[in-house]
Image (cartoon, rainbow, N blue to C red):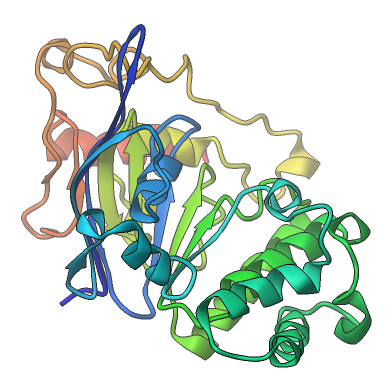
Length: 337
C-alpha cells in the first residue's frame, strides 16, 4: 500500500463567471522515501492539488480520494485532519516572509508547532527549535532562535520554514515552490538541504515547481500538469530524455542550457498563454499553443494513457502517434538544445 495515494482529485470553485476547474482529475501515489515532482506553469493546478491534500482548499468543492496510510483525508473531521496536518504531513510554503508571523520570534514559531502536537515543556520545545535550526544550517542557532523573521535573509527564512516543517518528523513533506524567491546559489543550497534531510529521515516529498530544472536531480517521478489536469507522468529519466507531450517539450526548451550565459543563447518560451479554467478550449486544452496541433486535437480530448507498450508506466495525454512523438523529440527538441 502506498503511503499517500490521490485518486481522481477534483477541486472546483464556483464564481460569478462560471465554475473554475482548478484541479480536474489528478491521480498519483507516493511511497516512503520517494520524491514526486509536480511541474507546470502558474495556474496549472499544482498548488491547489496539494492545498486540497492538506485540507486547505477553502471555498472549493473537493471530490475524489486522498488516502494517507489507508485513511481518506477528505472524509476526516476537522479535528482529525488537524492532528495529521503538520505532524504527519507538513508543508513548506512558497513565500516564507508571508508564512512566518512578523511579530513573533522564529524560535517561538517553531516551538509553537511542537507544543501543538506533543506533550513537552516550553524549554524542551525551545531546545528542539535550536536543534532544528542547527540541522538546517542556521549559524549560531542559540542566538538566532530569538531573532524575528525580518532579521533573517531570504535563504535563512526558507531554512527556518524547513525546520518548522520537519519539527515533528513528518512522513510526507510538501514543498510548494520552495526556491522561487531565492537566487541560484541559495536555491541550490536549499535543494541540497531538502535532499540530505530526506536521506536522513526517509521522508516522502512532493516538490511543486514551474521549473523542470528544480526537480532534475531530486525527483524519482515527474507529473506534468496543464489546465488542472495531468498531461504526462514518467520517471525522472524518461521525463527528461524521452517525454511524449508537446507541453513537456516546451517546458524543457524553456530551460537555459549549460553555458547559455556565455553564448548569449535565447530561451524558447512556450508561445501563448494558459487557457481560462472556466472556458477551456475544445479537445486538447493545449491545442491553441501547440505547434503540432492537427484536426483531432481540436475535437477530442486526449486520455492520459501509455503510448509505448514497452513503457506502460509512462503516461501522456496526446493524440500524436508514438512514431511522431519520437521523431519530433529528436528532430525539433533534442537537436535545438
